[in-house]
Amino acid sequence: MGTEYLSGGFLSNGSCAGGESNGKKMRKVVASHVLHSVRLDSLLVKRREEAEELVSFVYNQCIRNNVDSVINVRLVARRYCGNVIRKIMFSRRYFGEGKNSGGPGFQEEEHVESLFIVLNHIYSFILSDYIPWLRVLDLEGHERIVSDAMRTISKYHDPIIDERVRQWRCGKKKEAEDLLDAFISAKDENGKPWLSVPEIKAQCTELMVATVDNPSNAVEWAIAEMINQPDILKKATDEIDRVVGKERLVQESDIPHLNYVKACLREAFRIHPVAPFNVPHVSTCDASIAGYFIPKGSHILLSRQGLGRNPEVWEDPLKFKPERHINLADHHHQVELTEPELKFISFSRGRRGCMGVALGSEMTVMLLARLLHGFDWSVPSNEEKIDLAESKFDLFMAKPLHARAMPRLPAELYPA
Ligand code: HEM
Image (cartoon, rainbow, N blue to C red; front, top):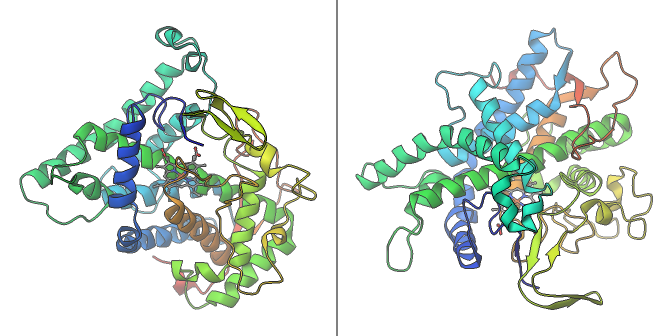
């Protein structure tokens, strides 16, 4: 069935894709010029730098607090996602000058916070999606909130993008070294720049928004669930020790061998999606699916919790049990984070499915594997168990996960 997003583009203010043909053009540029495997391979060094920084950031907190330290895992995970996407998009970790791994500065925090504000509003209900003339009244106040967040994001992105466009135009830049270069240098069949500067700006924001929430949310929930079930935590850590050893850090090339770690992440996506529903879609033609007739123009919302926690599909659906994703009968079975049968939603599928499956999977597995390999995790001494309550407003953990971390590798392995 053909579907489009309810508001035309991925971002609800419609700043990127106004209609089907524009949406198609954007997908084509992103798939063929920006997120293809050769480009992602060329950005491996940048991703590796951020994976080093991740370990060093947590290690420095442990050292500062006398080896045994309570870590804000949500902050660590979101910071890593923000750092990775800024690095591969703009070739820089920070917007400000002269920062080191002492912690995210105000600018980076404000940047990631604004991306999350935009994200939360993509999923939220708004009357004018159904009665468009109400939009001018902005009854829910969403228009103002999202516009403010977009202004903040633009404040950081625009000077970098404008300067880079200038460098390409004056011939100072000729080789694409990051995703921004890839957007600027993409040419159509007539050799003309494929995207205008406003389209490049919208695409940079779209990819930033698309990157920060899923990996950080899945890893925060996975670690929380695993701390409460130490046998699972041990099994995952044992797997990493077996595959990687204790003389080097986990690398992306290890990912194919980390089936149990990936099963833990699948389980986090299944039980703890980032939002109750998928991004709203509108059907572009009449269709029949599973015996239901869906007329053209219908608004379609898929319940992620309804799928992932469906007792008819999943035995004991609320239990965090990674083993259910491992096919014991097939020793060559590779666990993937994708779920093509949509028994739960991770990357979704179809013509509006996620365009960042490879990058998103790498980031998510590296984030969890590095944290498990580098540190022993446990409940803070003043608590008995990690509180797994969900927030009333979204499906994030109600309280950001705070957990005790203890370095578990030889000191010389932790990047300075
Ligand atoms: C674990 C990580 C990720 C997960 C679980 C995830 C999941 C999703 C989902 C569920 C959708 C909506 C699909 C639909 O509406 O049917 C989506 C859309 C999208 N994702 Fe991801 N995503 C991840 C990471 C990324 C990354 C790293 C990028 C790129 C840098 C990315 C780029 C996109 C784009 C561009 C869309 C919109 C596609 C369109 O407009 O047609 N995602 N993603």
